[in-house]
Length: 91
Picture 1 (cartoon, helix red, strand yellow):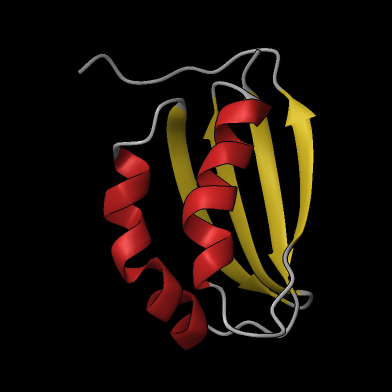
Picture 2: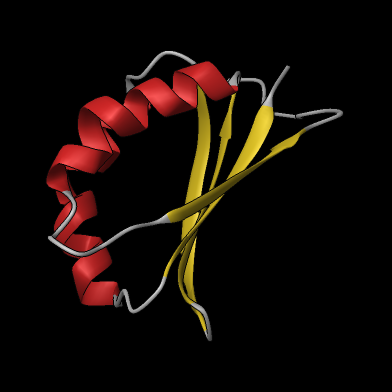
């Protein structure tokens, strides 16, 4: 079942996000199970929303590609929500 992953990174800035995501955007596009990524600044820090086909695929991508590239001391808070439906464009 598809999931919505919400990640909150306290203290993160647009500049810090851009530094980590510069190469990750290309990698995530090719990752099995990836559907959507978006991010924005909030009072709680930086928020990343992603939709994946499964939690397992999301966790694998995070462990292999994100965690090793996070600046020291950055610990994202991740939460998951199973989705009832996902609609994507016909491409």
